[in-house]
Length: 604
Image (cartoon, rainbow, N blue to C red; front, side, top):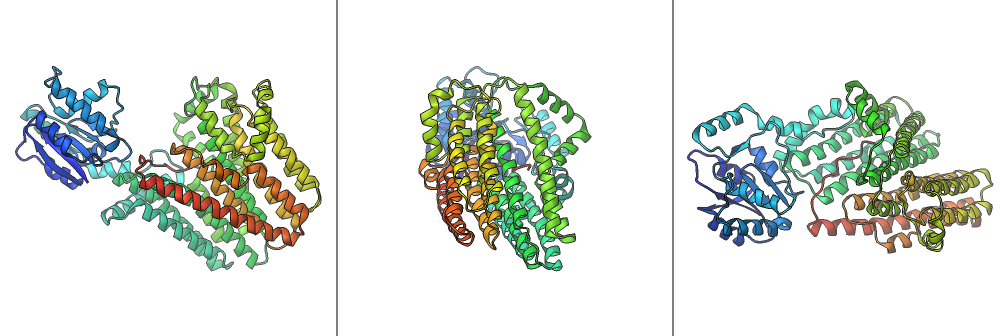
């Protein structure tokens, strides 16, 4: 429930009351500021409340943007100010001070605008949405009112609303092949009361059906899979556009949107591998390699952004060159397409699935993603080496959480913390890389079942502990989490391939998928300022080094067939633990009234 307190002198013929009711507000009328303060105190503290000048002239969508966005405790547009429960105390305090001062001597004669000014004087953060061509004004005389009404008539606010529903920065395929019509699907959904979460779920089911079609291994199944994958992507774009169109943002929705994107893509990889197997072609290694590469690409994105989003003195010649290139129209689209974002990637997968074979599809995917990963990572390394960024404790903490260190690595880190302070700043990524290469190459170059991968895994546990022994504030320390991800996933892939028995690679695919979910969940908790997963969860599933050591020990002690069974059991156990805890956490966050957020989605 939301309440709007209408203040000031009513204007005959004004639509403000009808507009506010259309936005879901229950109206109260205040004759003066004193009555407005009384009415404000009567509104329950767990409800949204708005103060709106009765003389307001503007678009309904301007009111919607200013008064109904759930992401901000306090927001204002000319002639209106609103507070959610988290901002009620600040609004009440500003109202009381304004009344005790007798309205002040400010030239602003709108109560809502005076309150907004008072909030700003307190240093309170008040969101002011970008209105663009939308009108929001409190005319002082009949002539100004007529001019404002004409300005409202000159701009189609529904067209503005539809345009703003589309993400401002997106890939070429999404911008020109999907968004021109998906925005109308979003409006259709909004008018029928559908929520973004429902559309997100529909997108997931569509992708799962596509994966099932691909698993048939028939040409008709592959064609249907490609068509359904594109349909799933259309719905994936629609859910975000629906959220922006109707301002239905939520913490749970952002998490669902992000995690379902990963689930859809990786389930489709599995479907392609199953379909290829029906035709006698084993591409599970390619499917697992594609998932590993794509996940590591995302971890590079997450780590770099977390390391630099609040860094100070965060400039470099490379960044300046990038900004200069962005000012040239055609280079923007070329650079966005080079990184193979989700729209281009899914379009490529869909077309190749329908027209070629799963093996060709995976080869193209691996080559494209490898080139994109090389391009983006090289650019970020250059930026990091040429900038003098000072990273914060928060950034170092986020990178440590993304590292996902278990008991072994944490023990090594504690024991070597004092000595680590004397090491050069580039030590962390170098040590992590050497340890990761040691365990992956040893597993690849020695016979399955031998002891040497176990020894290498112990070395890896040691080096990964040394890598996180001191705060990750170095220029390239953001590389540590993706290096650790590549080492763990790569070890599982290599050992499963070396086992050379039916079922080993699918079991490894399931294990990496379960662990990757945990790592994505960690990212989304950090992004939502909810903190990292609890320490007990990280310890219970071993940390990256513990899982790597366990897998090498299982390979050394068991036969290839037994190893496959063990990998399957481990995948199920990890999946159950992380899924139950993740779902419990996000549902609790949603029910607890956490600040609403909106994840714009991964470009990659």
